[in-house]
Amino acid sequence: MGDFELDTRLEGVDPEAGRFRAHLSRDWEIWGPNGGYLAAIALRAAGCVGRIPRPASFSGHFLRVAAFAPVDVAVVPLRLGRRSESLRVSIAQNGRPVLEALVRTAAAGPGLAHVHATPPDVPAPDLLPDPASLRPGDGPSYPFWNNLESRVVRPERFADAWQPRDPTWLEWYRFTPRATFENPFVDAGRMLLLLDTLSWPAACLPHPPDSGFQAPNLDVTAWFHALAPESDWLLADHVSPVAGDGLMGATGHIWSRDGRLLASGGAQLLCVPAAPTE
Image (tube, rainbow, N blue to C red):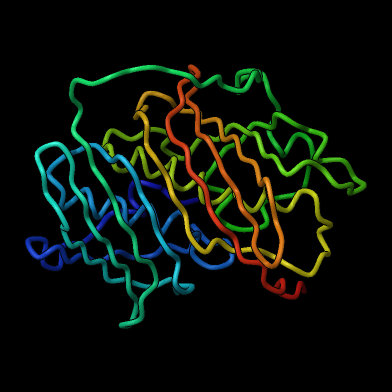
């Protein structure tokens, strides 16, 4: 089991120059190091250099699959303003680029305000089953899933016989062994990780498991609307509205336990031949 806060920590190589090192933990393995985990490291690195402790957005391109080994992280401030900042974050391994990202921060201040977002009408996580109770003896397929507790909103996906379903994913998640984080960039990082990771579970539902394809993310984008270090459970609400010509699109929303929209975003996925199963 991985600890999200510990496993996204950065070691200063030359902090004044924005140079850090991170050690990728195998606890976050899913088709290699999970992309959302890498993105969360990049987001946290931006927080080490920026002066405004409030992440506003993240946009990253995944360039290659990393190994479970140290990576070099470089943060370049593009603009450091009083109300907002722009920072470029590059992650490389053995001199080869792994992730390129842009991060915006924004200071809280006076402005217009409205809420026009209705959370999904679902039971609280305490009232829902966990996956193990619906399919006993069927453990996580990758170490990554040991880092999250989940509560199932739609148990029909556990039916023995496969059938095509709508490309939507709605489920509660809580990080383990620690669920909440005071560092605003770590708190936003858990939302970023869910926005990245759950694109494929939504996109694959209309297609049989033996389709011969899988679809890693080419990129991930997130807009952070609010932080919620007090909300242990996060509700992930994803949909893949379209797929074709080798691409699969996905969008997602992350909600707090008390129904606030915390983050929204999306990803573009690239269909590739599935790895052979043993």
